[in-house]
Image (cartoon, rainbow, N blue to C red; front, side, top):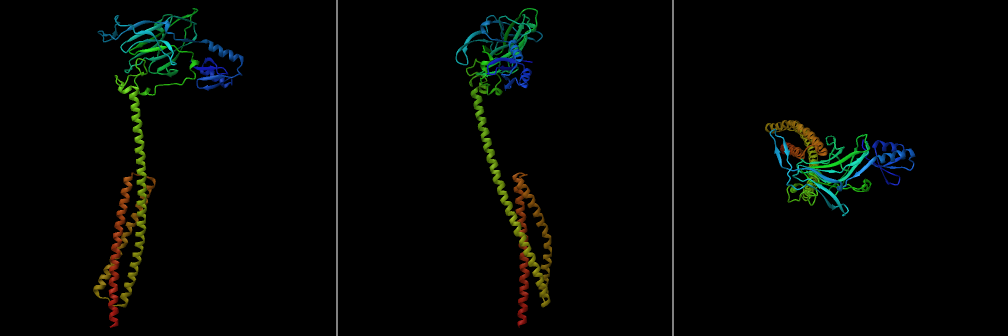
Length: 442
């Protein structure tokens, strides 16, 4: 378990770090409060024994800060690659190549100059720099703190490591991959990443453990610069790359903007300028999409409203046809009654009687038209469910209403034929009554 919880006193002054489990215990017992997920503040009520224990824990953590003056080039292999008979590749050092590691002053975050260590290159397969020997206490907690930049390429084929060796035993060293987020940095700032690498020295009968740190770079340049105490950065805001998910590699000082310019290899895809253009284009496309979608929804709303109006017109047309149907049925009944009275009062000629009987026989077939009214009721009910709930595409609802309108037109034509037939029967009976009245007068 790593001591990754920062501890401050009741005034907010940095004290040190402790284990997450220990921090939770202090908070549970009311002796500290969580300031955030990774920081606790001791209360004034902390018992002396607990305060002593915490201070003891803090004292056990030894922070080691990178100092480029204590480092030197150890080994370099360049990109001259050969292949043996078994197909295994190896690199051969070229003595004519320039050394790929040096110390150089660069601007720090506040604009001041700070000395840094730069090593490796895009074509250097293996560059290793090593610190001087540090005598550390056996079986002790330590943290190595530094700022790192670069160390990645666009092919994901780089080496970017920190190695910690004890007593010169390189076969049993600690190796930390510092690329591709294998280890999460504490902070991002202007393309740099802050690391605090915890490690424990091995137990030893000797008074101190000879400890050396090494940075190893391959196929990508990297830079390391000193860091201050971690408490110095507590108020700093994290500034990760906004386009990190779109780039094949992280920020590197060898480029003016940290990444290839738009006119350089890969810059047309991964430069800040290209990605901002892409983001702006994507934003415009998204805005256009939302605009088109809003217009489409508005149009659909208008279309559904028009369909509702069309449905209401169909309902009104159905009501008018129902009323007309009832009126024609009553008229038929009245004409049949009148016809019976005429036969009782007057001797009707065979031709007129044949025409009247045939006409009234034809009206008996009208009852078959009631099925059309029933079908129309069912379809109107179905259409309302579709329109009110919008359960079907607009085109389907339009098609159904158009079909209902066609049925209304067919029923109206059917009723027109009924009315025309009743007009003929009434006119014929008027003629019979007129003739008989003239005969009686004579």
